[in-house]
Image 1 (cartoon, rainbow, N blue to C red):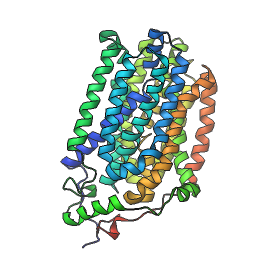
Image 2 (cartoon, rainbow, N blue to C red):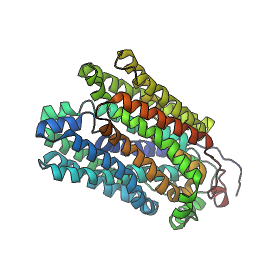
Image 3 (cartoon, one colour):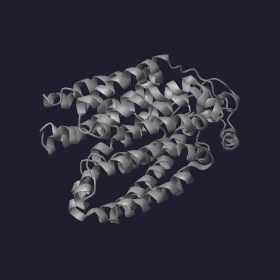
Image 4 (spheres, helix red, strand yellow):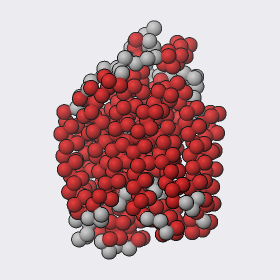
Length: 427
């Protein structure tokens, strides 16, 4: 078996299908868990007389559970990621209906928490495991495309869901969202494959590789027990540095994104202006997701992370001056959303760079948990500043300086089991 590099076609028809599918999983997660704060929660609070701060707090906890749930689902996803994703999507669909019909605040709060755990399964865990399985060395550019699903939330969901509520009511809107989710679950059960070998292709779409041998690798992957135990992962300072240097700027980005519209309204700008910044920012984030994916692939994940932190830093500096000029609202929004297009793809890419597809689940279940918990914390942080956005932005800048130092000191050396040992595919 040759061990030299083979020609790769990572964007073949089957690969494109998987990119679209994982992107949809990320979109659903972003909409139903992370995308509620700006418009959905204020709408429901006003409609049903609930306390908006309570809803926001539980939405933040749900986001944290989106991260903590990785600890529960990571090893199960290694066995059968598509099955776990499909089941979690069905659970999410049921929760969406309950979310729309229930007029009991305690019930809705519990449902929000279950939605966070469901998202942890199908998006934060299974989508990332599938990506690591299908693209062990091309994950950077692939995640640059698939994580566009996350930023699409700002374009197709958050600004316009209140309009749907007004048109057909909250319950029926949630029913239609649930139907869409069930359709995605059915597609998952029928068409999605856990590994490229099961789909009749190869990791990274490499050509000139014996398909029979790659199918044997599928079996070995299912039985593989990583030597990287939780104790080893947690005891490595570099793992902490990697998770924090990506997670902290994402936390900062979430403090900004979750308060964009309320902050601009508090500064005296009208709702249409605020929504426009949010919508245009989401479109720019699509470009940013692709661009950072290319940077990741060409220059390496570590350099992409450093650049990401710099972009978020500049955006927050601009946000400090939004009150005095709407031009700074545009600058901060465009720069931050552009950078945050890469927010969710950099950690799985970094973990894949260090551990590869064999040891990825063992590492990501812990590093990804910390990362996603920081993301959820970003939704909760604004509550502690009680509308003092200037103080919040100063806090954000301090956090970004810490993240920058961690990023510079982190190491991206590959230490996992290479595919070359079994497949002849160059790492």
